[in-house]
Image (cartoon, rainbow, N blue to C red; front, side, top):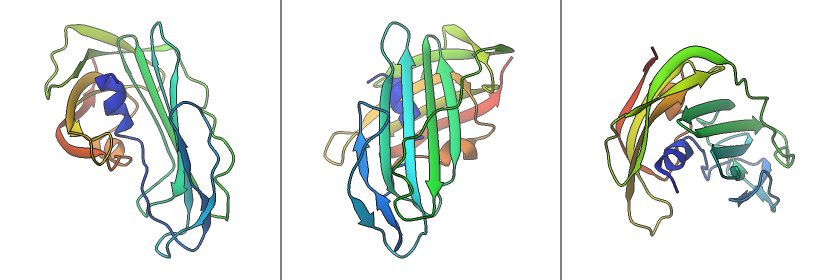
Length: 198
């Protein structure tokens, strides 16, 4: 998995929490939709969630991941996009508040590919907590800020901790918007900077 994809997946929410509402629970790491059993959530929250990601790297097919579950209290609807040189990532999170309401598949809104005049440093490394930026990426659409992330993460509870770093364009306006969807797989964020491009 590329470090950009790993970093981008930090924004993917998959929190096992819930309430007396019934939510579909499933995940698929190869498609845009999944189906599973309806599960009665715990009594602390009142919504279901679906989170869908897409990672595209030039020369390869898009990679999709979808999670459906009971929603955590802090989960909000979210549409996030980021880009590095030759790579693009998007995440959509949707919550709803009736039994079984997360059964339907999500669709991403159209991507605005118009250059917006912003450029950002771009790099992408695995196994390191820093990233030099030998290239720049021209930002498009709502990706009007630059991001620099370095963190450690854990793919599964038993796997060793891994590290990554990347720089590129982002739709997040501030660090809080990026952190809003952090996965339980994140061990530690060492660097998170969001600022205006040039």
